[in-house]
Structures are given as structure tokens and as C-alpha cells.
Image (tube, rainbow, N blue to C red; front, side, top):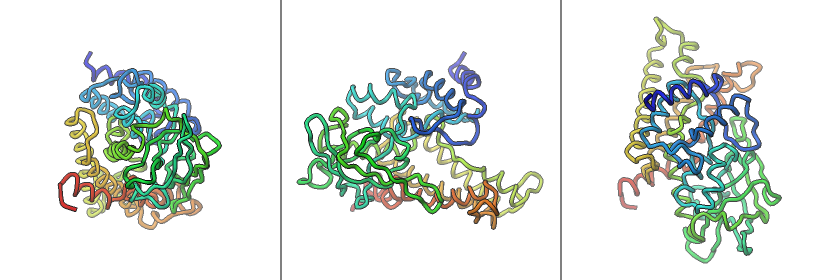
Length: 387
């Protein structure tokens, strides 16, 4: 039996029907309950190493080559299997620890990420340090075998659900701002951490304000060298912006109604085609661009032998953000007056959900590094243009 046939048979047998097709992907951790099927799918995939298929087996992965990883991805997509777990652990801090972590850090953190036992959040942006991240002021003071952390982070995605945080802190204030920064990991479940969700115009609260008052981080969880965290931080952002980890485990899928299905319902259809020719053209163009984008990601993954590229990842972040915003704008346009719903008394749950997703999607070109920041990186680091 070929590897493809083996993977196909395994997925058919082990992925529950309720975990196939569009839907939310669990983030893991201890604070958000899973359904029985989600728990079963996660446990089976983790046992096989398919939550992080390219990671070494000793850290919870399957040790797959890039070619076999792509086969797994293709078979998951063909079946409609959602990723068993997703989040910053798999997409960001996990790959970063594989490159920069000590053997102790890898052994303690990576298997738990692979099993979906920990929900991670990111402590980067601060009220006075967003796009100019190196201006951060959160302080970590040396206290022997640990650091004492004081300060504030903002836009901390899902911090209210998180078990652990990877955090940038300043450990030296007497050097240029890109120096004197350290990269530390610590538990969110301690007295010195306070989290306050921020309600957005969409009505959701995925972002939080996070306050540290004498929070503790063990020196065993200092990633990289003291005062040299900027290098680690930049590499993590490349993992985030590439979308490679999501791609590699089949998680790079938009949620919500498919555009063509939605358009046939609200715009009508003639002989199986969307009745509105202009809308049909717009949707076709979006689908072509989305498919080309995914193919480009896959080709890059193949060419990089499974590793994450460098500054070119900003191209993925920039284009992917615009593509995501375009999708929600098309959904609202298809719905017409049904796409301006807020309260569900006058609109269906799906209609108000589209409206809220459109509002939430406005953040795509800001979160994770604004479009302007990505363009600067592309200009300087990819194209080699002068400052």
C-alpha cells in the first residue's frame, strides 16, 4: 500500500464525520471545552503525529518529509477533514522553539503543543509599541533563577483562553531599542497576570489587554540569549506570516458560507449558474486568486523542504490579508440589504454572522503586522530597495 493510500484509509477511519467540512478548529488548552468528536479526533491525530506532521517524532510529530506532508494535506482536503488543533502553539512558538529552543525547552513544551494540551498567546504589542514594536517597555528584572515582569501588552489574541504566553520584555534599558530585548515564556495562570477582553465593532472579543504585576518567568524559559530576543521575535513573525504551518496540516481554510452557494441563494441561479453575471465574474476572480495563492504557498513549502522562508513571508501576509478582507466584502455584497444585519430579531443567524465577520475582517490588514509594515519589509528585504 502506498503512503497516500495508507493516509487516505487512516483518515476515513479516524476522522469523525462532524469534524469534516467547514467549521471552527479547536485551539487546544484547558479552558475551552471540546466536543466528544473533537476530543477523539485530536487524540487520534496526536497519537499518529498528524497534529504537527513535520516535527520530529520525539517532540510529538510524525517526522514526515515535505513530500509526505503535502500528501497528508491533500488527502485531508479531499476528505474535508479539519485540522484537529490549531493556534499559536503549532503555527508560531512551536516552530520557533524547534529552531531556537534548548533541548529542555523542546522536551517540555513541544509534546504538549502537539497533543493540544496548551493554548498559547503572544505578548508583543503594547499601547505605545505597535508597529514600532522595538519601543516596548514591559520590564523583566533579574531575580536569581527567574525574572519578575511588570508592564502591559495589548491586542493579545485569546489571552483569556491561554495557558501560556511567549512574551517580549526589556531586560536592558541602556542600549539601542532593538537590543536589550529578551524572549521569555511563562504561565498565564499566576497571580501576577490580569486579562481584560476588548470588545470589537463586530461584537466579539478575540483581543485582550494583558497586565503583568510581578509576574514570574523562569530563566529556564528564556528563549535564545539574554538581550538578544529581537532575533527570535523576528523569526517567529516569519512563521506567523508564512501561513506554512496552517497549510501543512490542512488548517488554512476560510470559515463561513461558500461564495457561490451564497450567491445562488441570494442572487438566484440560471441553469446552475449564478444569475448575476457581474457577481459571477467577481466570485470567479476571487476563487482563481485564492487558488493561485494556495498553490504558491504549497510550491514555496516544497521548495523550502518544509522550512519557513525568510522575509518573503511578508508577501503571504500582505496578500492573504487582502484576500480575506475581499472575501467578507463579497459576502456582504451578495446579501445586499440582508448583509447589514446586527440583531438577530430581523435577520437570520447566518446573515448577522456574515455582517459581523465583515466587520471583524477589517482587522486583517492590521493584526500580525500592518500592510504598510509588510510592504516595507518586502521593499527592503526582498526587493533590496534603498531606505
